[in-house]
Length: 285
Image (cartoon, rainbow, N blue to C red; front, side, top):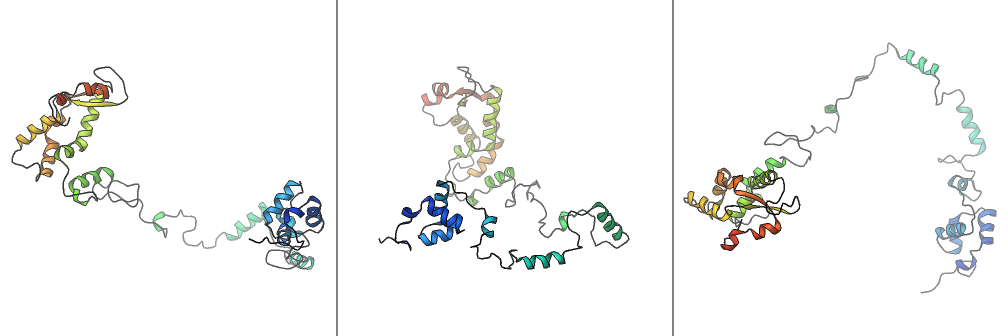
């Protein structure tokens, strides 16, 4: 790769001395961009060397006033006017009111407007339903009419859980009802409520080792497997495979599942030691 040399036929690092920058930047009033273009380098490099040699860098306003600035002394839309143009503009503005206005001037303006018809809606608070971007406020749940916090939702969380349980086929992970009945019952909100009621009753304390808090679990005194067996015997007219949805609805109302006297709080260690159903080779608790 060939090295690009500047008009001085050398690399910029060899020529960027303090005396060179004072001569070009201070005395000749050249900008960092112009110096960088001559040396074939970046203008940030010039700025770094100026800082290195403690040479004061000009501000933006000082740069615009520099003789080498392309807009110096020219009339343009940015306000760089000649002295003659500035004088003409000053003469035209004479006699006009400028901020800040005096209290007397404000009072005269107020008196001049009295008795004149006001525009429609003047002085009235603007109603949000008249705004062009008003969308009717936050949406409401289509089932319980509760106000929602998300504009993209149509149901609240509680109604959505009920709707999802009643229509599992709409879930993207639905595989035709392959979830076993016992897992379906354990995933019910009633099962979670039963779990919480027992923890609160036992003050979140293990009933064996008296550990308070931590990893606590709820143990079935009468195993869940036995309860499920009795439940299926009571409703033997339904199949646990083909009529799972019907059995789940019946399980919600079957009180032995939700009897708090059948539950006790244990820590993880004590729960393993008190697994009666493991000794009997019964799955689930």
